[in-house]
Image (spheres, rainbow, N blue to C red):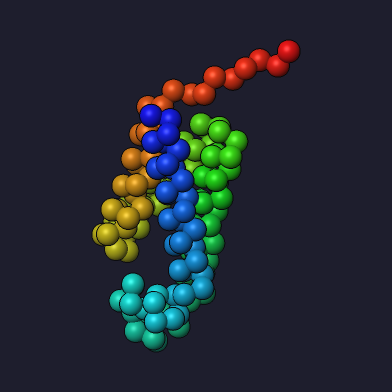
Length: 125
């Protein structure tokens, strides 16, 4: 179960890196307009807000990577919970598919992290 938790958490972290890149660097380009179904005027006028939003997604990814690198369950739980809250809020207020692309993977990763046995910590001698 630990391997599944690791893989799911890594997937969520990687997806948030992708979201960050999309929102910060490709929002006002053809790919961003196609993904979010925007006109050039809408993407241009909202690019600064999207970059700010992308930065937050980068922080979520960084927190998840921190949890993965250190192996700290509490850090993974905290950042996965943040991903779920952000995904639910985005799904209810912006685009319903965010529930499935952000909140659901976060929830699955969180459940796997909680179900996995914590790694044994060897005492220092």
